[in-house]
Amino acid sequence: MASSSVIQGASAPMPPGPLREFWRAFVANKGAVFGLVVVGLLLLVALFAPLIAPHAPDQTNSAAFLKPP
Image (cartoon, rainbow, N blue to C red; front, side):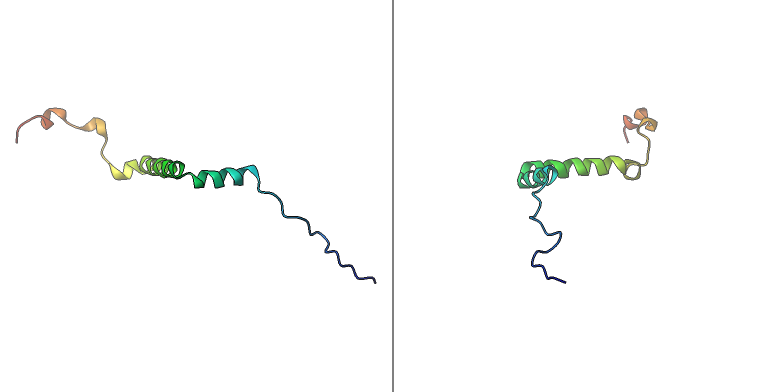
């Protein structure tokens, strides 16, 4: 059996894909990251809105709201 100095299956590293390049450029932009955080927080508030404000907004008594104490 002859020995081979070439490693089977080894090749040059693959270049980063377009998604990875986009992500690196996105993370480098501080304004874009801030916007993503704001959108994420708004999404969380919208998803947990029934827990944050459990009362229905259409069931308020606006006449009682305008009465003096």
